[in-house]
Length: 218
Image 1 (cartoon, rainbow, N blue to C red):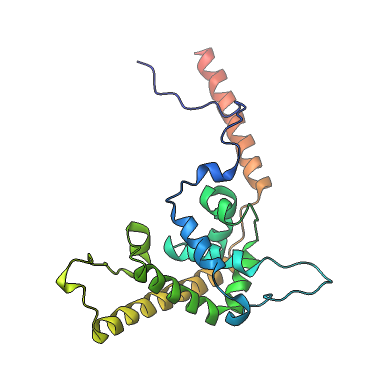
Image 2 (cartoon, rainbow, N blue to C red; image 1 turned 90 degrees about the horizontal axis):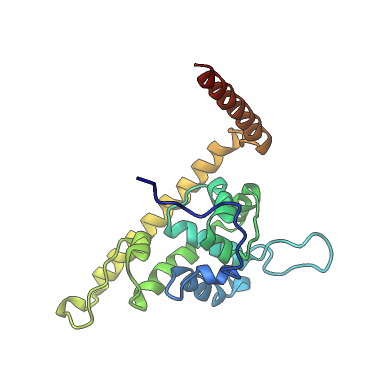
């Protein structure tokens, strides 16, 4: 019995025609964009909120915020992993418009804007709750369940709001700490270079060919 066949990796295709075709209308990435673009990056005090006419242009702080919000929701806890997502994750490629900042740039953005990042994470969590947006993705942000509007238990007391905010603050602190620790760890570990991968592949293919030759002589 034959196996289910996938698509030939070398098969040329004309569809989908653009990245937008991969991101359905209900994808949370649209929410991330809408929220991020509503922020005043100057008021937040983000580095490079204002640029100079000379020198190398920086990455747009709004794009970097989108990357970090996505990482926050999906628990991507290192700059190196965020870097990897920019070139292999369709959702992140869509958010970043295929920009691929390296892990050092991503890490520096966090270090330069730590206070603002915490504020953005907090506001994003509260913003989702205010608009009744909840589900698997957003639940991953603050762990809060939003009750139906018809429920008598939907009355928000000051105590419950303070408890919710405290929970959000705790999760934000844990995430920022994890980023710092993992980035420090990554700095001591060398990246696997494409050349090293090609070298190993070459040896594996040679071993495979030698194995086939030996099997053929049996």
